[in-house]
Length: 183
Ligand SMILES: [Zn+2]
Image (tube, rainbow, N blue to C red):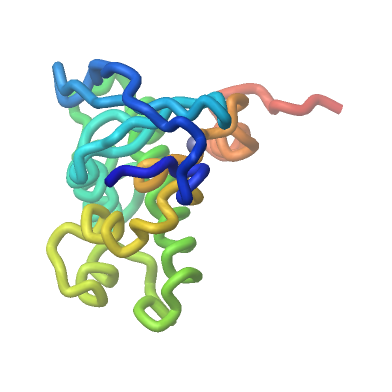
């Protein structure tokens, strides 16, 4: 039986709360649940979908794999998003995915040192260690009990509303925006 991520022991009134329609993959209906004590909704995601992020885990994994194998992030972005209006937006699109997955890999390596000790934190290395071809989907099973504490696209921790400091740092590095902090 499904239980509330905030109250695993139950008793909080956790109940079905309709569905919402995801943009990607188009038309996917995701059942939603509500915890009255925590005042928040949770989505029951099919295993292959990214959490709090468009698309599937496999799509994101393929992006990171391409970056792992490319000369540079820019080269990978150019390859992955020939449809983007500019290389800068392609790089931004690619970097967002890589950053999220590297963060998840780093957290998993810390949570499961027996499996990931000394890992290069690449898709290929994680595939080897998990003995699987789809790392993120497999990792969701591995970390099933702690998904409520893991960030997207694997787990369900909400992203910081301001986008965090990460975004600002990227903008500065790419040199496309004025410095975020003047003086
Ligand atoms: Zn609850």
